[in-house]
Amino acid sequence: MATKHTLTFVLMDAPFESARTTIAFRLLHAALDRGYDVNVFAYEGAVALSFAKQAQHPNAVHGRDVAQEDHPLSKNWIAALMAHARTRGADLKWVNCGLCVDERGVGEAIEGARRGSPADCWKMAQQSTATLVIPTK
Amino acid sequence: MKVLQIVETAYRATTEEQDDTVIWISHAMRGASAELGVLLTGNAVNYVAGEQDGSGLMLGAWRQTQPPAPAQDLAALMRKDVPVYCVREDLAERGLMECKLLEGIVLMSRNQLPRLFGEYDQVWRW
Image (cartoon, rainbow over all chains, first blue to last red; front, side, top):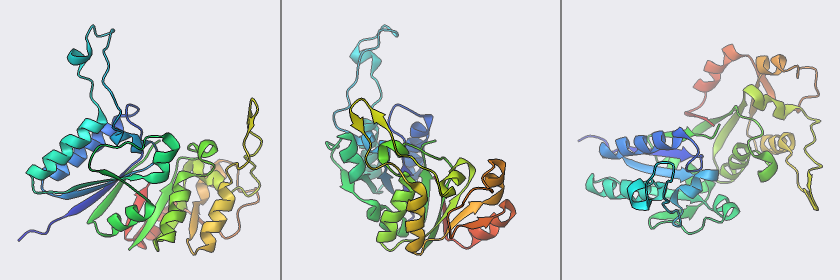
């Protein structure tokens, strides 16, 4: 029987700032697709990825209303990945650095994203096959 | 498990955070019994310049009372038995070899890094 792998990702970029965010989410998807359990520790600006009050907007430059523009929201990506994990028999744990959340006033996270601390990050890394840090540059 | 934290990007929001966020999380994880080392490369080698002073920021009537002090934060980390390494060539390129460097820092050449990496179970490049 194959070993069940767990991967931990440490994300740092705020949403809507860097291509690293999209790449990170694609990596999460790929890991879940393979049935790996995945932990995410969101640090600094990345705690806003799961902020529940993110909202779509129209885009006059594109000539589209809100519905047509269908602007991506990272909170929806997280929710989609959590749902995807369930279909793959995998587990996606999402932990936000609590102090980073407080600094930014983004305490209202979507369901499934919880508040934690660097101790959680360390514990998740210890329990994982590997850990990848994707930092802000 | 032992983890080597590589810090390359320097002064990343240090004024807003009043610390370097990777040094900070290293302190926090050390508090959770993490076994860590810290390697400073690139511009982050400036953190070992012991006489730097980040104080004095004023914006209107607001003035910063707790400015960042990365050298002191690194010194505190070393007191918690976290070794701090610094790439010698990166210091030399920036003219910092003549500065008063933070006591206890381990200077390493780039060609020594593979051996250093081998001493750790994981390498986290921030």
